Image (tube, rainbow over all chains, first blue to last red; front, top):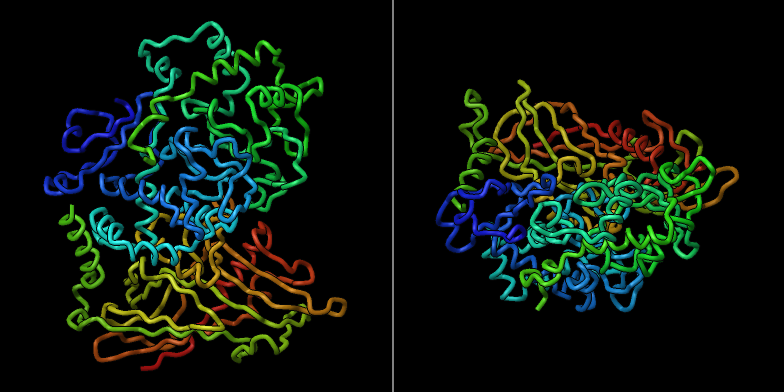
Length: 351
Length: 254
């Protein structure tokens, strides 16, 4: 029940965890009930301010329709859901980098979409600092959806179903950029991943680690958790994790938005929830398996000038001292982060 | 919920009209203001694409594109009282090749002595209600940085020549990128005379923008040192600062 959202009127009095403001005007409940974004008890506070865009049933439904609508792209095919598939924790299954309209190829791997309401910034380089603005990048990027907001608004206005849905979802009834982005956010902030085996252990709901997983958890806390921190499995910082520079893209990471040489090759520390399904890994999808990732951290690192000091050892070796057995134990632990309930949640499903 | 929102909106509207009950002008209906931005070099309008100008660094330059975003317009009365134009309607692109006029409607009647506005989009205050609706306009004008979901506050392009360089392209795209660089600026200008807003008048205000100040303001920018300035942690903030000194309110006419 933790990721379920409730009708505000029915649940606001009984649950202490409802963080969203609840407007207590009964008339609004009838036609467009407010949704409550429930924060799981082992989670931090929301960063998304729901008082500025309170999710409602109609807003969520509209956001979902937009999310899966190819008309948000120039070729009518590439929707948000095209690269963010629920079965794979909203990533582009087996695609190294994102694919766009007319076969265009991007340069970065599509990240999973869950627990976005808890993040401070978005994209591999953190260029977007509010979820409402994030969709502007994939929608307008030539190698992704290659569309304009002016174009989308024109298309949507011609569709009576959208006219009705915007009318029902927003007080000002308008089909405009603001409402498109707000509806998308209302859909996305509801996607919470918090029912993995790990969560059920952390919340003491009866699940237990196997010996292999428990050993992996201990190793993870020693070697990985300083960056993949806390329940979100990221400290939301930007770091160089010792990847050899990919000549094909030469992606300089956060330096692209800061212009600072000390930010070269630094990327967001990704969250690890559902990591079993979100392959391939790294900002450019260069590793196909978790085994390859662990091998990189053990013996594949190079110093491109800005490597995180945490990876530097006194003896000059770069990386983590993990035996093959220990790598397997960490992988066993990482698989406890898979959240089947999210993957099968019909509220977020395209069909 | 509808009622709540309407009540809120009414309060906002009332706030605009009724913040100063002592003011005799509040009995008058609101009025309009036409603001004309006049981009100049050496005190004259700019001839695009053909005429060569010279900056203080003795660099000759030709302008092919000149656009900037003006936002968050606030009119200030003699007693310091501020009347903010509704934020959602307060974003404009000034384009040397197209429109340089801003028409403001339903402004509280009164006598104003200063005008304040932003150069760019204040992303530190995001989300501001309605600001996302500026996206289509910014797109049309090429002022949106798609990869950064941000706006180009200034887009200034052309070619330049020095003793050793001939007709090289220069590009200045100045904006804010995530939390790493905030180049949004605000300027407050004294008006040359009292600006009266009301139902019986339709005043226009001329704001002159001295484009040479982009190069030679508080900071000196030389194209021969760097001719492509985008996402630049050193030069972009300098140019943003220079922009704050480039505007002057020169004339009010009714």
